[in-house]
Amino acid sequence: MTGKNGKPGVDARIYFTDFFDVSENTLESYGAFNVSLINDLPLFIDPFLLFDSEEEKYKSLHDEIIRYVKFLRDVSIETSISRGLVDYWFRFPEVSQNWLGFSRKGNRGSGLGADFASVLHHNLHRVFRDFGSESITRGSHLEKLCLLSGGVGRDHLSDFTTNLIKGYLLEYTQTFAREHVEPKLRRTFAVDKVSFDYDTRRWRRGQYDLPVFLGDFVLLTPKEILTKDEAWINRSELLEQFEEICTSVPDAQLRAQVNEYFLRRLAEEMTEQERRAVAAATAEQFPAVLDYYIKHKEDTGEEAHKVSSLKVRETEVQFGKHIRDLVGTHLVGTEFYELGDSFEESLRRVLFLKDVLENKDGYRAFYLDGKPIKREADLQIMYRLTWYATSYDVNRELNNGRGPVDFKVSKGTANKTLVEFKLASNSKLRQNLQHQVEIYEAANDTSKSIKAIMYFTETEFSKVQKILKELNLLERRDVVLIDARDDNKPSASNVKD
Image 1: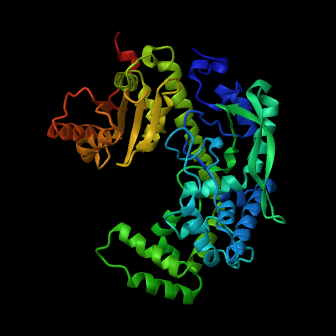
Image 2: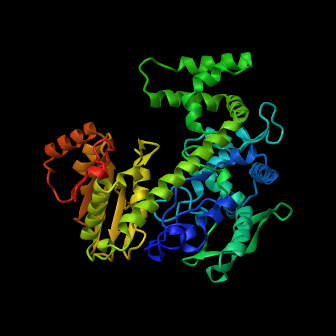
């Protein structure tokens, strides 16, 4: 079944344009990303793209972010602040309505809780003392907070940024919705924390006419401020390139102090993790190094826009075109969605995907520019998106106290099945097969589970076969191997009916 513009029909709705009957070209012309309303997609707002933008509206948004951080810095020294006010000013929920990020189920993440507030409060006076009067960098950067703490990652950075520009995103979405989304698919929402009044030191509410989905509003985000994997200024790169960064510090005295502190703590037999720990400790001791790293990132800012644009485009192809082809061509209208037992539903869905991937060119959905997508998180999202039309609760990466399981498929308390969806290249595959699922079954009170393993090369296939033989798991119905090799697929012209 297909709808207008050749898109999947009403029973195969996955993306914003499907649910709100909007042309993809219209959304593309507006510059917004076409989010999935089934599961978050792994993109996030990078504040550097606001800072380095040529558009004044984005620069102004970045200025407002920095202004609020300066406010937090100033009020954090007040000794009379109540716990309630600290929570009110420092803590924010995830803006789940933008359907972006790294949610474990649907679009609900953890938001910015007590840990983030604690790290922010701890680093404010050391890191943000010169906010607005920097002498090394061109401006102030929120990302600096993340450079000194492994506990503040890209998701926290994006959540904080999204909260502080939420008013703009609401206006951006409302403008599009009023012009292109039918009134019956919109609703007026009263939204908290859309702008901050510095005179009263209180957040203001606002009312907006927005697209409505499952009783909540949906937010659109401009593609030009999104990226994937890492922010342009990020802790991982800082630690990986720390020696090079230290060597390039122009201040000779600081460079000598940093190198002496850093090199004196290194040892020849150190692991990469231990070396990164030494780099992190050195950055804590000499935070001025962070400014030189940030200056380098500012000087190469043009590359940030190119890289981010490419990553967003790759995400559109990977989770948009490929999934749409997979669902629209192979899954819509089949009995695939009409089964009544969670184990049989899950197993036959995996087997159906196996058939599509191996025999109907569906494997191409797991390749990008001829290269296999070898990230389990991406594969899990793809798998989750194929559950677009089901009465089952498909809970991704549920943690019931014994570690997260990839999927729990359930309908009621007695009808549930666990699904582990893994790559053959996973270094812990044997450990996973031997112990993990049994532990998960006990924690989730079920004895039904499925292990689906995808391999991309002959070497990976041989590795899996060896592990399965050693664990006596060969020929088991609940262990499914999926061949995603692109070099052994027969040409359609050579395949006989």
